[in-house]
Length: 499
Image (cartoon, rainbow, N blue to C red; front, side, top):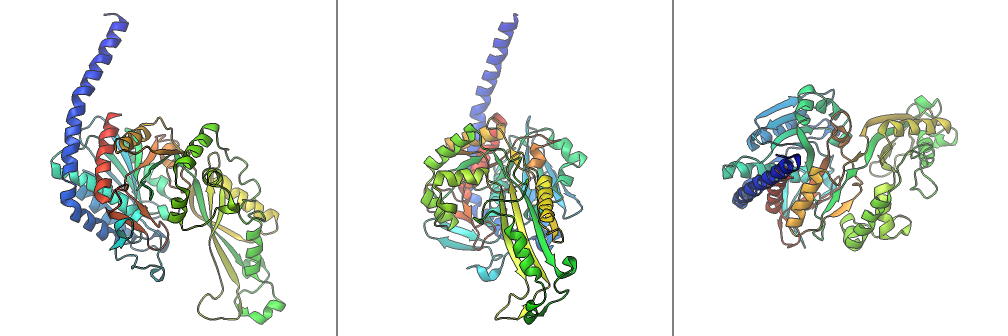
């Protein structure tokens, strides 16, 4: 047989094999999806129970319990091996599910959540109450509802659906979870680089992270990466400065004693330009990669297809910085490194006044990074900037952070997501990167070097904010509730097996 004829024969055989398996796969997917609604109540209950067990790394609150619960959820969902992965910080989880499939896919979860002040919530943040939300339907409200326990529960519910249908998954799963995502994932690399984890991940075709990707208009966006981040504290103290008080004084002494609080304010003022927005740290953004022509084209299309007023409504804002138009706002979101003040704390903040001169002031900051910037480079630039301006006494304590991440639109995880969305009647909007951050660089960089992406129908809002929610029963025909999200993960797993 000639080389050409042999190649044609093999291509024809492969096509015939694919054609013979596709109907079977479609029938199996239909069988799995058919059982989802029957188990709606138990899927909701599983999510509520998870929200009611907060694990907050920033407060070192119930972390071991949260890790144990994560492991139990995985065993219940059908994972064969589930092991705790110790780190120098909070533990992670490594698990595998061998379905006997020819292809393996990596899955990333986080089991920690942000802090929550009950006084700011209309429903207690860890009650996981079911609440009617006008225009949307019934939601579960609670810390972690959308970030990330809602979509993660939907993914686990999809695995339960395979068990209920008596069918094996079309792909094997390699699972890694951490309990420190909300403090900048300072030890996540220790989990991924354990020999047994690395060996399993190297067999995968990509990494997926469940997320509720539908906006209020029902549209979905596929992000080809994410910004990096560093989280840190700046601390100004009289003791370290050598000026000002070493303990709080009566405020009348401000006439003759320096103020560490004002010193911190002056230092902070040098980090941004006069507009209070544009980063002004020397060398911070020197390596920031500008948007390419292709990325600008993506953003133009995104601006054309998104409803600006709906986006503003979801964010709770009325105007963009400098009153720019929607296109420029989207370009800034994708391309601008940022210097953000998360919080300022100094002296007395309780009811009424307390006339003191504080001896200490703290600012909590996060700096978002775009491609070609690094967490290490950003930290070094900040320290050098402060020292150059005479603020070398101010402590810079980095608590966590990581580099940006990028994934090709041609990767299997992105092509599979696109195919599933389109079959659901949605034309996904492509974005160069999400403005938020996740430690995807651990997967996309050395030594793993795998494509990584987010997927999921469904909707949620309020991450890191009061009244966070995840949609359970949708009254909006454009947006999927929990059952629809679960079915989307079934379709996605089959698509990942096929691409």
